Image 1 (cartoon, one colour):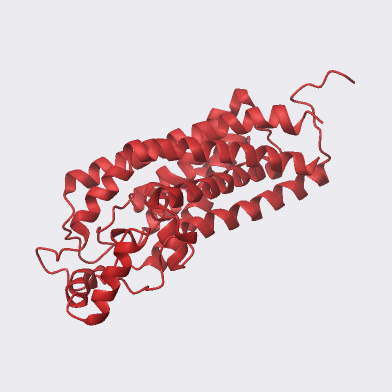
Image 2: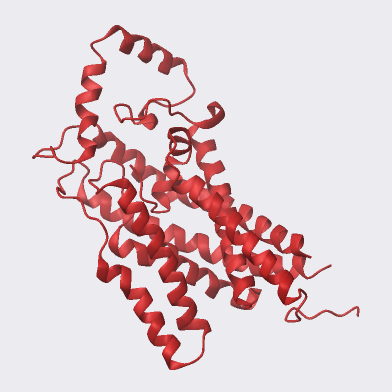
Length: 261
Length: 58
């Protein structure tokens, strides 16, 4: 029986991951590609303190050495797109897994991420003892979107390549903590009866926002602001779509697979 | 027993916890691996996904 619940999450996650890939290719990826055209250039005014600076300098230096010529030839023959590898950043052994195309990499990552979120949602439902059905699936999805995307985005808006940002590790810690606190807060707010639970829930939702997300010291960027605004909305809209599909399909899979034994 | 309602409790409380905790751990592993892991290959493969999902990236 346990396996059937996990199978239901797997099916819902893969399905949602495929639909999410289509939504991303339509609304989000074009904006990422557009932003990457600005990413390598030096910022107009003092970007000297941000870690992302090395981009521009490193790219120009590379073209003067013999190694760079070999690199250019190799990258021309390689199936991996160069712009994608973020040349000049401090990791050098990157590249897409198994020599896949950029699209295949994104699709694979969406399948893994979709399955991961489906398992997290299913696990949350199982542990808390509140079944996900077709009737309430969209609400579960919306709550997942709030916890994983909307509430963390208040402190760390979805960022385009080339955007200035604070230390990566600190942002990741804040992000994970905010997702966990938001999920706990939403659980108390929506699923636990009693006024005390509601109050504690609101406090948990507000705590990471009051504490504040790590912010960059210098916010200058080459990427046009309009692009950033379009991207933030597109990223939140497509993830909302993903979570609604995920909640509904998980409810459907629960009823068809998990309980059909 | 041919009729099963969707609201019926199929798993015992203990099985439910086991399944739930296992799902949470596996799900966290997958999401953190695709979204946050500090590996160049994982980063490049999942690059567009990380940005689209708003994971802290770069």
